[in-house]
Length: 185
Image (cartoon, rainbow, N blue to C red; front, side):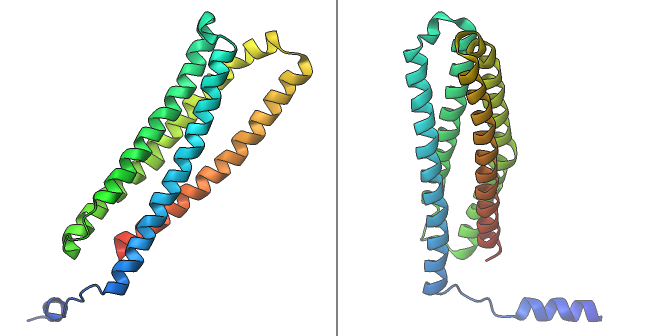
C-alpha cells in the first residue's frame, strides 16, 4: 500500500462524530435566524407593495396605460419576491428534525443552492425591473408635479435606492455566510 492509500484508509477508519444536542440546537437557532430575516424582508416588501397599490388607486393609474403598466410591474415584482420568500420559509421549516445528519445535510445543500440562485439571479432581476418601471414613471411625474417636488422625488429615490441596495447586499452576504456555515457544519 502506498502512502496515499494509507492516508485514505486511515481517514475512512476515523469514527464519525455524531452531532450533539447542543450542536443541533445551535443549528436550529441559525436556521431560525434566517427565517426571521426572511419574515422581516416580507414585511418590508408587502408594506412597499401596499403603498404602491394605494398610490395606484389614489391617482387612478388605470386610466393611464403607461403609468398603470409601470406601477403594475413594480407591484408584481414585489409580490413575486414575497412569494419566493414565503416558499423559502416553508422549505426551511420542512427540513425535518428527524432526518439523519446526511439526509439533513443533503436537504440543506439543496436549500442553500436555491437561496444562492434567488440572491444572485432573481434579486438583481427584480431590482432592475423595479428601477426600470420607476424610471418609466418619471416623465409622468415631471409633467404633473411641480419642478421642486419632481426633483425631490428623483433625488430621494436615488438615495433610497442606494440605501436599500446596501441593506440588501449586506443581508444577502450575511445569509450566504450563514448558509455556508450551515453547509460546512
